[in-house]
Length: 203
Image (cartoon, rainbow, N blue to C red; front, side):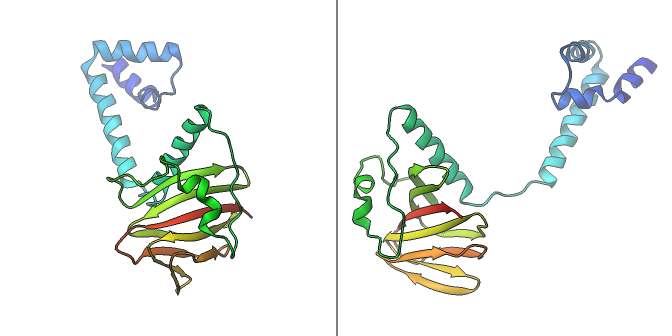
């Protein structure tokens, strides 16, 4: 029993739980797990403690994170399948939807029937700029950008963009540039999804 107590106190089980053991240490731990139920119980207790810690310190990601990650995965798959990188125009105050017709009329650049919240399809992504078609049905969380400019061109629907408590009302055809370091939130105000060209440019 003294040997088992020393083994438990050695820290090897915690290291094993974190997948930080060497091949030799892993073999030793797994041999002990197979022959000593108390070691298995101790390891299970370590896993439970790790899970409890993770839950207690978990941070709910912003609603924009998952849609943009999924859109990036989709874009990378399209490139692997041979899609050519074509950089769209930079959004400016005089930009028009017709400038993005090559992407807007593509059959794969549509909103799925089961989409909720925020859905995005990337048009192009480079170190200098990422441009996407985005559909929103509710609220996009408060954000602050310190290293990139965020620009919108409203295509369908309406929304409000609140910048430091000042509300800007946007309709189809409107352009909006979010200033650097400004806290902002988007609220959809139409019955239909608000469809926009979203562009983020390196500052």
